[in-house]
Length: 230
Image (cartoon, rainbow, N blue to C red):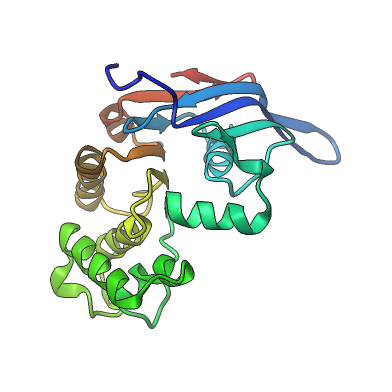
């Protein structure tokens, strides 16, 4: 594909990850290598239990591998101390999960500005950015509503706006429409693709939705500890 040129935005080099129980060892990744390029879209597919979410969590620096490196523009992220890694994660990676993890009792815009407050940004500036994003995701008229008063599809749009408020280069979504009906799912799928094109933002999604996966430029899965084209 045309955008897979130049240096990768993110590289996994020799990454291994396993889980041990009393009776068995589950090897998710075995010295795996994988390159992710700026602006591309990737679907991670496959049956439950193969490690899709684990892979996403490693890329998002939420989980550390046993061996190997996670490089962001050549910098080894897991060589950073916890504080610097947390700052990087908050600034450069947006997360959207199946369960939106919004703060109940707070309004839509109050939820969206949280990453900016964590980064100690000027509150007025981050509120302006949050308002723009809520307008972009179709929730301008709902921004002062408490999130528990919003529909499931609206709540997931708030979660997407929150993930984008720091203008990250990478958006990671783990089954982002798993709890939504078909209409809202299709709307969120379209929105993520539009945002990818508008912002040249790299998007990686874990999904069981074949229709959504086919909208992505690349589809990969895990097999024998390797990340392979599906």
